[in-house]
Image 1 (spheres, rainbow, N blue to C red):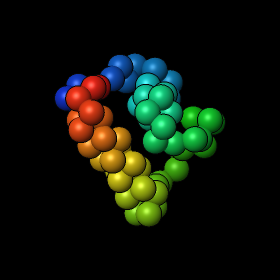
Image 2 (image 1 turned 90 degrees about the vertical axis):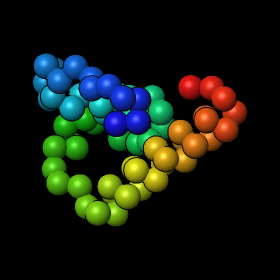
Image 3 (image 1 turned 60 degrees about the vertical axis):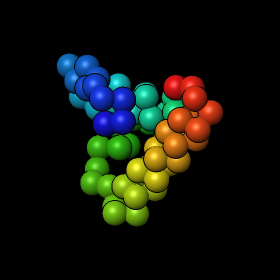
Image 4 (image 1 turned 120 degrees about the vertical axis):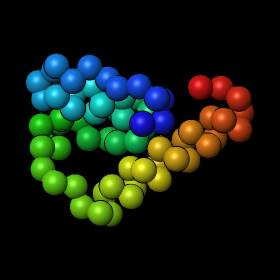
Length: 65
């Protein structure tokens, strides 16, 4: 969403690459990708989006990505 591109979704589960990218960015500490195969609460969604927003804002302030 913030990087302006989609990741490969031909994996199983299809969201595997998004999960790996979120772990890489420090947005989640969840190691079992299959445990994410459930609905997210509003709270969990807001926490993920807030962490992503802060990370990108900080990276833009220092001029690196």
